[in-house]
Every structure is written in C-alpha cells, then in structure tokens.
Image (cartoon, rainbow, N blue to C red; front, side, top):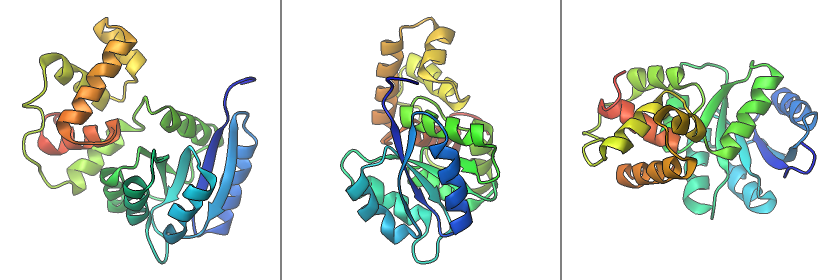
Length: 216
C-alpha cells in the first residue's frame, strides 16, 4: 500500500464500544484512516463538511436522527458526497433496505471480521462493486414495494451490464465477462445510472430488483 492514497473514514454510531472497535480495526490497516467520530445522525453532515471523509460508516439506528435520514441529507446537501456504508446488527432489517434506497453504497454487519470490514471500506471507496447482492435481493423482496418497469429504455448491452451488476460484479469483472474494455463498461454503467435516475450502482440494482427487471 506504500504510495497509495489514504482512504479516510467517518464513524457514525451511538455505541461507544462499536466506535472504538471500528476505529481500532481501521487504524491498524495500512491505507485507511479515521477522520473522526460522531454519535448521532444530526452530527453527520457538519462532521463530513469539516473532515471531508471518503467513506462514512453509518449506523442505521441512532437516537435523534437515524442513518436513513442522515444518508439522505448527506447525499442531497454535500458537494461530491462520501460513500455511505451502513453498519447494522441485523442483515434482514427494513432500516438497511431504506438506507440503501436512500443512497447508501452497501451494508455490513457489526459482527463482521476485521478483514471484511476493511475490504468493504475499500470496495465502497472505489465505487466499483456492490456488497452482498444476494442480501440486497432478499431485502428488496421483503421490503421493496414494486416499481414500474425499469429496463425499457436500456440498450441490449446496458441490460446485460445491469444484470451483471446485480450479481455483484465489478466493472473489471463485467469487462472480462462481456469481452469489453473497462472504459466501455464504465460508460455503460454511467448510461444505466442516468436512464434509471439513480446516483450509484447500488441504487440501480435496488431499482432493477423492485421493478422486476432482475428476478428476485
């Protein structure tokens, strides 16, 4: 990791033990740094404006403002917002689904091993992969009311790319599967996001599941 840019992380959780554990895990890993900590969703936007983190580890259940509303505020009001990684106790949690629909880039269980936590931070910081697509599919099936058709405006190639995004493949993996250049895949992903009216690939996959474009 020598010479690589450092990924800075803001931790938002009302549990002091959870914050301490996440800080210890992140600061022990080369290339990752904790920019700061907050204890409630109301503090996320001011802290992000102050410290400019690359990633926010966001608890979904906090006392005054939950992680769902904090995610919405962060993405709506922050220029070039950080990636949000939801940290939760339970995977099958409607709060998690709502946070993903609000714009979180992925989610992670609090009991995850340290190597999974650090890799998750790197993945969402890159913005090139969806975490736990099977779990997102289950959440969409359990909590996502159906939406109208989502894939009708996509080209055949964009439809292929969206289907592979739903499998959790990165741009590089999609390029290999479809025998395309990485920049071509990146262009297709941009077209998909624009046509679906979403800000990132996680939201694109949620919409694909909710609309029935990708079967649950």
